Length: 123
Image (cartoon, rainbow, N blue to C red):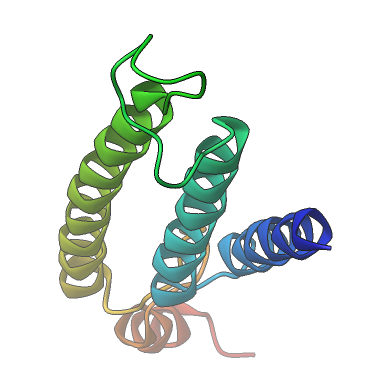
């Protein structure tokens, strides 16, 4: 039962993350990347077959905890935090430069629309 619940949680986190990444605004993209990183971290954590109350020293008991998944998840958390901060700063800079928060780059800012209307020849 717990395997099914964890699998569903990983699927929901990843699916929601992909859906938000496919949106055309910066905040949902940042939130989607964060949710996908949570899903990947949970996946890495569960693939390590975590044991409770097991020492990390191999040979101390018949079951030992594997420290590699914990180290991978800790590293992934630090990298995800740094990338989230970078993407937020990049989105703020793009918002200031373009005047909108669309990530595809095809949306024309409102000031440029007014200039384009003035240049059109009158019939």
